[in-house]
Image 1 (cartoon, rainbow, N blue to C red):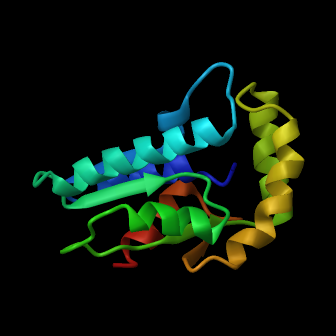
Image 2: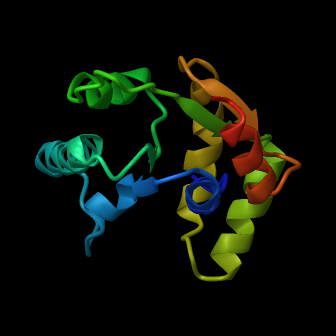
Length: 155
């Protein structure tokens, strides 16, 4: 949360041919935001349904998906529900230093984009991303454009 996932993916969508982008947050945009077993199951179903439709659609060559996935089990659950025959999967985590993350989220709080309670929760999750079976792109000192460029070269 706060590393620039959505912005980076929007840029990546423009860089890659025949690309489509799904932000997992769009599948769980509610008011009030509720986290319980029912809503967690619903969002996973929503995400997987849309990703499966994108995979089946011949118009798309590149499917870009982002979401806060701080546990390997979240990634594994989503991947297990997809038919990846004839697909190449790249799992990538955007990571950054604690200072960079605090600075980014604090700016979002000041702009009214986020609430201050996410700062500590996000900082606490930093170490979890390093244990994931993903390629890591450190965005501490680079722009979203630079991150998208690095990701586009990971093919």
